[in-house]
Length: 203
Image 1 (cartoon, rainbow, N blue to C red):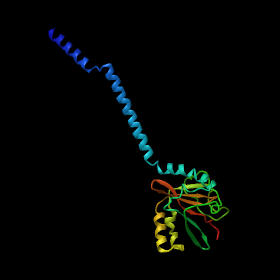
Image 2 (tube, one colour):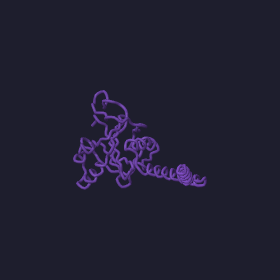
Image 3 (cartoon, helix red, strand yellow):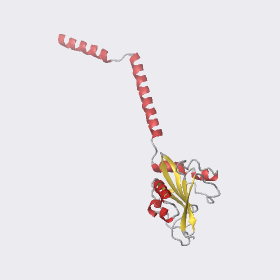
Image 4 (cartoon, rainbow, N blue to C red):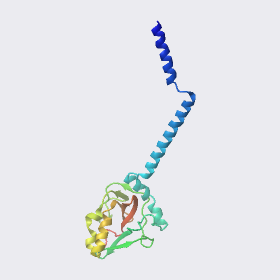
């Protein structure tokens, strides 16, 4: 019986030691809230620092392209170091010019407000130029495959610069009512690096 009373006394003492005081509870609550806040801030900061998935971030910038075209201001889309290569037709041969500014005089057709992610339309030169109509985007790099620089008037140094930028292309957009646009991710920022204003089936 004596041992039983001693055991109960020890348990009471231990439970008293483990029971936090009211002030300590408030302190612990504040520490927990501060920790949660700190973690939330870190996560938010990381989300801001980390680039979105390429397709998502591309769609965000692409949605503003038509607005930029209407206001004649592509400065936000053209990398100041890379510029943009404009591909036009010079008879049978492609004509390639590098520009750091696009204007309404060059772009007579307006791009669509949005693009559908699916296989790019194919040129058929039938009743319609393409086998489907609309604005389409795909993670593909046809410029690199075409080796178009070998059929232009670029010198060797210009060809090397052209290829170096062509290798950065991530998305190609064909607007069947407009042009073919090529976008690169340069220093974690989307840039319009190539623009093909040629009309297929003509020339």
